[in-house]
Image (cartoon, rainbow, N blue to C red; front, side, top):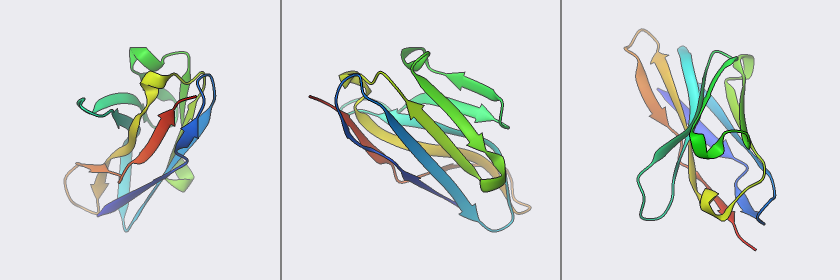
Length: 120
């Protein structure tokens, strides 16, 4: 089993910045990909950014040029640096990870989510 714990959400004014962190823990697991999704009230969960390894980053169009995903593979941690935040970025942000738990098959894991609110 892999446990993901996010931190770093909060309230920020439009144009501001936040940095989210997510740490994966468990026993004998191997992560292939980590990323972030978000879900705004009344909307479906959507992909924000994901990274395979520590260099292959992918972003959703609405956040390109404003958000940066990075990983510390040794620490099983993924970060999301969010700049130039807009009110439409308001959502619960979820960390996700594809990982092999021990000798088991590849699985998708989710964190509990952290609230990001962009408002003046």
